[in-house]
Amino acid sequence: MYFSILSAALNGVEAVPVFVEADISDGMPSFTIVGSVSTQVREAQDRVRTALKNQGIFLPPKRITINLAPADIRKDGSRFDLPIAAVILAILAKIPPGSIEETMILGELRLDGRVNPVSGILPSVIAAKSGGLKKCIVPRDNYFEASAIKGIEVIGVASLEELTDYCCGRFSPETPVCNETAGKELQPDFSDIKGQEAVKRAALISAAGFHNLLLSGPPGSGKSMTANRIPGILPEMTEKEQQEVSVIYSVAGLLTPDMPVITHRPFRAPHHTLSPQALCGGGRIPGPGEITLAHRGVLFIDELPLMAAKNLEYLRGPLEDRKIRISRSGGACTFPADFLFVAAMNPCPCGFYPNTDRCTCTEKDIRSYYNRISQPILDRIDLRVDVPALKFSELKSKKTKEISSAILREKVAVAFEKQKERYKGLSFCFNSELPPALVDRYCVLTKSAGDLIRNAYEKQLLSARGYHRVLKLARTIADIEDSHEITEEHISEALCFKVK
Image (cartoon, rainbow, N blue to C red; front, side, top):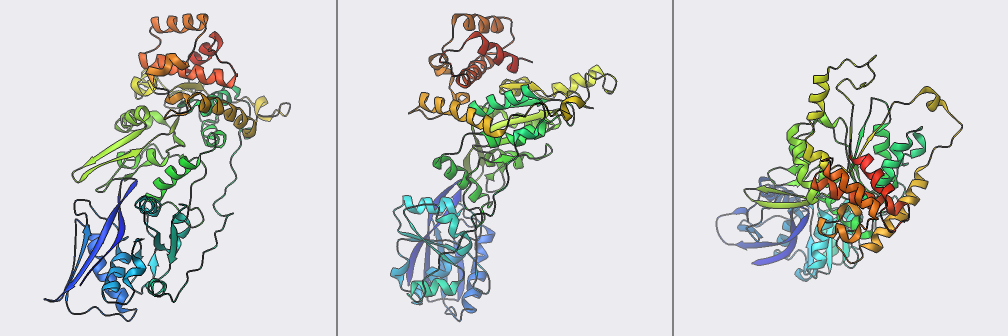
């Protein structure tokens, strides 16, 4: 007796349809799972056998073979428990085979028959819809995540008994109620930051054009506060971007019933001591790292010079290509990594240079500290701004009202609309993404602006990459100022932020 249903395996941030095939035949009693499976998948035989037994269903003393095809794709995790149980139930005539045709099934089984949630539901449902399937049966706790994809029926089951009753027409699953207020947090506001007008200006330009930003200043000057507030002024994510980010978080197992879809731009702030695998992703079966979890959002690294040199150099490729490819013996996966990079550092190891009354560092210490950041990394950072320590009078001043995130967000939105219209029909929408071949076309300079940047290049203040980044930065400044042409003032401001 043979039967087959559909499930899905994860390959990077994509799901690949997998046929779960079962055959029960005469022979020495056994339960075998084949098809390039991991230990977790192979253990499904014990979970499935026991879950069925606790539902009053006993497997016949025959040879049971489960094949997960295609066999050249590695299968991992516990997501195949429920489809394996379902295909066995269909062979044993416990459920009508027609009830699970054109259906994708995913879920982990507990020994008592309850169904646990699994990661990667969102890309699996996308694959099911793309393959023309009519419905998906998923764990109840994954229902809201799966139902984010329109155009395909989603059934959430909490136990093996519910799956059986649904297939036999004895049970109609209730739609769970989503707690819409859960997971919502109050966003920090730029009005909390006293003074620091140049820093806020740099944050505005960074957010408007998605330009990488480096903040340098003594401890307590507001570097981390600034970085934390940048996601709140970035343009709202489009539906496509929300789906891209939600798929990544689904694969990483970071979506919850209260937060089934990522609607706000991510903000990731890993410690500078993180491992290369945590930063870039990896593992025996590659999973997303911090740079992928920050996709379409902000990756903030504090104490940048203290980060391992190897990790810093790993950032070079993603900052340029906006993706990362991880190769393993079993295959290779490409993960998206289109993020806004924001970094912070002290002016010296002790943090108080050039205050000679407090700084205890030698010139050699300071030089060595700065040299930990290579020039190729600095070339990929568009804005570098000093964050000075606040004076007491500035800290306690009540004469001026600090600029709020709402005001900055409006300016960013205006600049973003200009970019979206300018790059309509192209594969990118931010000035920072403008390829070198199109820089001259979209960055129109006045004569004085052209003379200024030529002089800067000839004095070796800029590399070829730096030259293009200054032009793209000036393009964003011009968009904020509602100017079609890039003037000398725009180039001058861009050079002040770029050349330090």
